[in-house]
Amino acid sequence: MGSSRKGRQRSMVWQGDGSVPGTADPPMAPSPILPSTEDVIRKTEQITKNIQELLRAAQENKHDSYIPCSERIHVAVTEMAALFPKKPKSDMVRTSLRLLTSSAYRLQSECKKTLPGDSSPPTDVQLVTQQVIQCAYDIAKAAKQLVTITTKENNN
Image (spheres, rainbow, N blue to C red):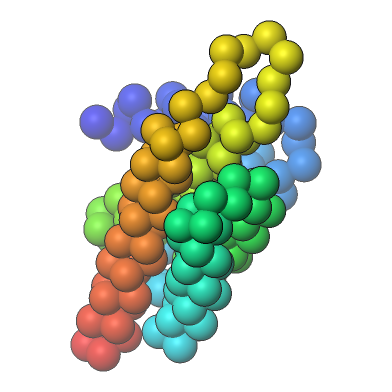
């Protein structure tokens, strides 16, 4: 398990444009340090507020609002992920962070499907909306898990 992840991380360093600070640094030891519960809750509230805005847009069929909403969610998710160490020691933290960031990325790509395209067939907006709601749910679930984990760990 460990070697396949290392390989994937190494390939990410070479594919990048070098703008991500710290990716070329020597391997770091996993860090047990977690951010404060207050910071995690603050970022979660920001994510939640943005998700509510997106869900409201979905209910009102305002599909043109999907992309700006998803971008705000992505920014909030990136800020929340940045609170945590690059290599968290806890498997639960790693798994929740992965779900959080991958769902935010998936949300953005789903929202982009609402853009009118010349070559692609017309988008099934109902299907895209279902996917958008699922991504939003996964982001909220991951954020809640991170709040739970940091609360528990910081109270030990």
